Image (tube, rainbow, N blue to C red; front, side, top):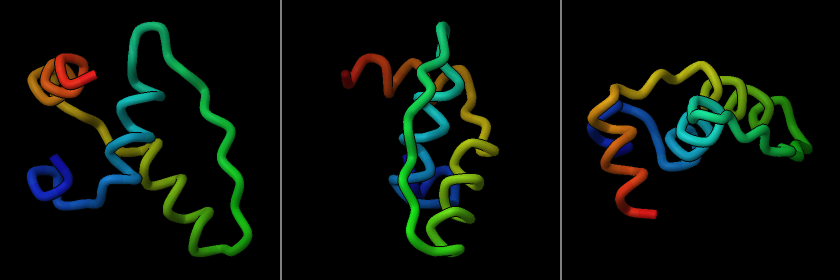
Length: 59
């Protein structure tokens, strides 16, 4: 899924968690600006309905 979206696994997981119904709000701990940028990018990533269905099925 990361390759498909042009990003990485961490961002995909955050997008999946925050974009679900109901949304899960993960507590993200960061210790650098780079990690914060990574978390923000994950929350901003929008998964398609098909991608979300495949992730749901995998869980």
